[in-house]
Length: 160
Image (tube, rainbow, N blue to C red; front, side, top):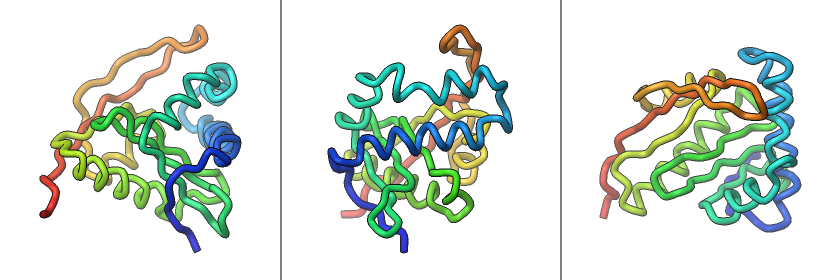
């Protein structure tokens, strides 16, 4: 059974692995080998930035038999910054469940409009959850250009 829980400090190495594995397993569906390599290396090449994002944000972990298999991070309060699922656990609705959890937390924090920067791969997941495209932009990471999609979703006020 899959359970969502709060991030724990002992999860960090698992989240690095989930991130890397998800990009390596699925990234080739829309990106070159070089782009995938650069993207997948983020938790290692920019370890301080990755750790700060995980620790400073509201990070939720999806665990299977107490082992982390997916995670999502809200940082800052109006931005879904990270959403990754271990390759062997995709297609089971985990990303959607984590998104719903993050959306509830953003609502609780008084956010009326939730933002995210989607990849070619994650854009359909966000569109299914009601996010709409605002614009797209090119960003340079490690000497490679990436297209990302700036998306947003209106959130209803929290129910009292």
